Image (cartoon, rainbow, N blue to C red):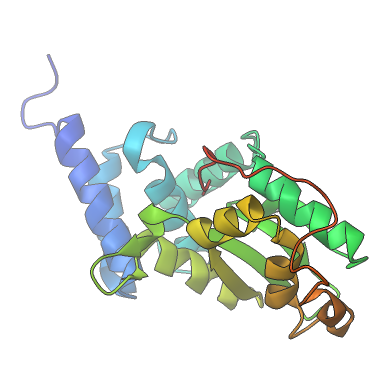
Length: 222
């Protein structure tokens, strides 16, 4: 058994979630106190459903220079290093978007992580640091489809680093690919900052030059 009065895994996860919620709300004065209670001396990156929340808290503390002791700084470094070592999962939708951009001769970086943490489907460093982000069902809250907490914090962190995030939904992109209209859909997203893409907004037959298949089972990765 554990030490008398020691917190169990459930209690520690609840405290970590509370720390993350404080970060989402910008309540920086309570982020670290709640986190320190959640850590209870454990310096490793957590696993399971709170892993991404922990990474967001770690980045929030580092990027906003939230005051904390040596133990917190050590934990932040461990958690962010753990995120950088994780393999990126590329989906068929990622390849469709990059393929459309290549055919339109739009310079970009294909699917990758920004800030070593957040996956985006494409980035355009030479176009005033724009990036494309695909929002899945977990990113939106019904009934008004506002951004979920982790999505809002992701967008906040990217904006703070100077990125302008252009978003599209997984459903809209998949529907365009099924209709062989990925070029037009991608062109519509990038044309406001890549004028060369405007010629692809409407094709002769409304379709794409390549017979691509839709990515039916792809999921957004964070």
